[in-house]
Structures are given as structure tokens and as C-alpha cells.
Image (cartoon, helix red, strand yellow):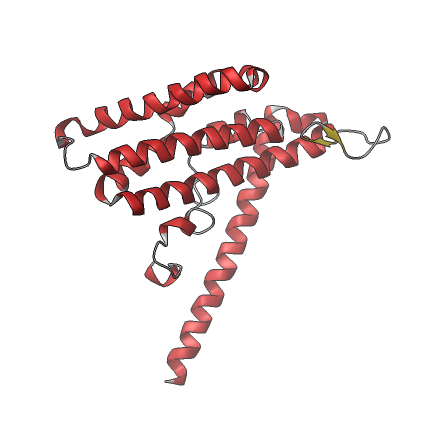
Length: 217
């Protein structure tokens, strides 16, 4: 969809925010989007850890793309990704042990996040370092924003707080279900529906504008 592509030298930097958002458009990485978003801080940390791994692995894969044999490329990608996941896991355990405990095994499971391996196979292994880092940044920020939005909504409605800060006072009756798995499914489902509706409306407007432009010629 070339007509949807944003302007600029590196359109890869912005496509992950909206046009190809990993969660709301590609519906990838839904496991962490549901499992660790019972609070805004957990969602934010998971998103940042994933972005770090995505940036590091994209840098190495793009730099070594001509040296990696095609026959072992997937194995090599996984080893590179696992290395950065280990760095993220140990760093988080050292500087934020409470959050690390909350996230549990989901940090280690970044290794099998299809967003990361998918970007290495589809993009970083075929493009320059600059374009690969732009793609990784856009996808990482888009993924982090999606997780944070889900986590913030669930925490505000389920606990009446954001980042642990009380927002509504003692009179607020929290929706405890929002902190449970059904709340994750409900929040993500509503956001997916809203995102799809807005995207469809934008597409109709672009189509109408293009038809009007062609009719005026």
C-alpha cells in the first residue's frame, strides 16, 4: 500500500506507530499484551525490554546479514535474540527486582516473541543498519505504546490508580475484573475494534480524496 506510506527518508520509523502497529494491526505479541498488562508499570517495562532486544538484534542481524549463511539464518537469529534477552533479563533483575518478579518468565519468553524474529527475517536481514534500526525503533515504540495503553486502562479501572498513584480517592469502587484475565481480553478487544474502525474511516477518506482528485483531472 504505497499510498499509505508516510513521507520522509525513513518511513520505517513511523509505520510501527499506526499503519503497521504490531498489536493493533498485525495482532502479534498478544500473549504479553494480555498477560503482563495488569498494571501500567509492568506493561511499560515489558515494552521497553522488548524494544531493547529488537534494537540490539536488528543491529547485529543487519550488520552481519552478508556473513550469515542462509541455511542457518533462523538459528543464528534466535541465538542473537536470546543473547539480548539474557542481557535485558539480568539487567532488570539487578535494577528492578520487584518488577522482574512480577513479570516472571515473560521476560525470558521475549525470545519467542514473533514480532522480534519476524522483523529479523522480514526486514533486518535484507536492509541496511540505518533502515533496520529505524524499523526496530518504530515497531518497538508501537509495541510499547500498545502495551502501556492496555495496562493503563486496566490499572485505572481495576485499581483506581496509575503507576501506583491513587486517582479517585476512597469512594471509588474498582472493577476488580479488569485486573484478571477477562479484563485483559475485554480491554484488548475494545481497543482492537476502535483501532480497526478508525483505520477503516481513514482508508475511506483517502479513497474518496483520490477519486475526487482523479475526477478533477
